[in-house]
Image (cartoon, rainbow, N blue to C red):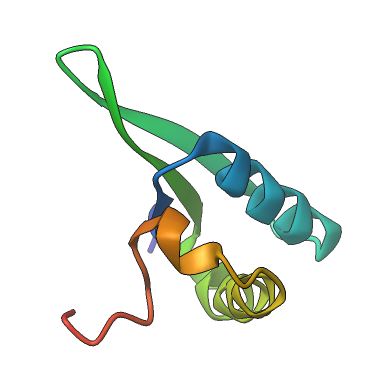
Length: 84
């Protein structure tokens, strides 16, 4: 089975995605950022990781979330959201 990119989190602001990307890369996890655009409007910034790295990346994400008290205002789709 091939490894594939999956979405870890979707942020409202690109700078938040960049912070997480830096932390993921510091932990040795490769990741990618993708801007979602509808009619030229940025709808969110996805942080994507390989599915084999998802659990480790989720731990890094949770640590970043814990460190930034205003984090929840910047998240569009949280992997820990109970609505999934």
